[in-house]
Image 1 (cartoon, rainbow, N blue to C red):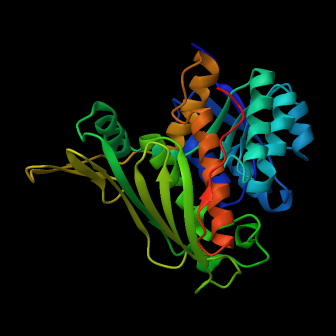
Image 2 (image 1 turned 60 degrees about the horizontal axis):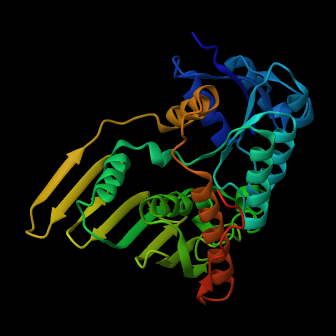
Length: 335
């Protein structure tokens, strides 16, 4: 039996702890979190003790440890690219929470560093592992929906009310265009998986209700290189909401939430399927381990991750210019 990948979690805020608990709850996973590093070790000592994690002094100690094969980054977005490059130089595989980076140049540097070092770099888009999305993706690829014409998506929640300017999640430099980095990017990634890269965007983002300076209402129009169009909204100041709706020349398919798929053909025949809940956090970490151990493909490809960062960067620029159409830069990396 192949030994599991020994990994360290970097960052033990709310999401880092979620990843630790998801991994612990998946005993057959091929990845095992054994170490941790965080910028506030005093706040994490009890958590690490309870979960059997060895808490190291800092990131450099973690990279120097021969007992660690890989790192799982749940750190502020602006730190990702630099941490990936340092981890790759130390020969560590990297799983990084979305977004890969906030700027395309930084994302390109991270991808190039991982490829040069021969380590795997995987980006944490856990909604790719939803069974409902898997079925939608299969429908799109099979041609059942015909030529893909348009996509609409929304992902919103109320946790913007919990953020302050003193928190990195309430920092506008870490969260350009409001909820895009926290929620909207999941929908953007799903759209890119279905329709390919985005050619240009127009985004409006406003601060309305939350206590921090982060803009909590964001709406984006998208023009895909394929010729399809799209719209995406993400709010940080309303009740929880999710929708992904794909339109084709032979019908449409919709995820009204993350557990159901509804389809409709040109004759108006509607079908609905429900799916059992899955721990998508555990699944993405196990897929990362399989990518390392067996060279298995990871659902989010490097070019999709780069296309997502490029679109995110353009959305931030457009929102700063009150909705001007901004061309999305193409990556210089040829994959």
